[in-house]
Length: 120
Image (tube, rainbow, N blue to C red):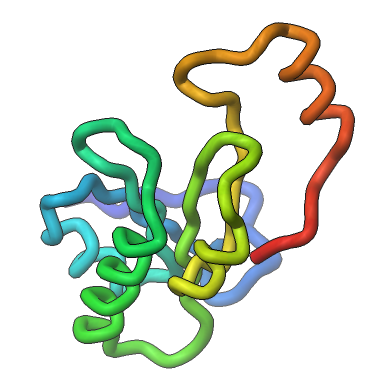
């Protein structure tokens, strides 16, 4: 396999952080993610991640992690998600997105305009 390089060279060393996505209940991608800098889990049934899901991924990755240093657990969900519960389960980032059911344009613009909230 030919190794690919990108230009310009990133300032972060040894490289930019790599977050590996994985779809529950398949755990194999999370074993791979353990070798990198973070994981972005989603559920195969396309439901929102729960704190129990997050804790499960954190436990699995922890058992397979060989490197030292920071490791991110990135979780996405709609506004109104219990971010504190996600943080307690091990999430380090929460990315808000519109709910699958959809909000009105006005509601979506309102939460975007509100900007980032505090949380993991």
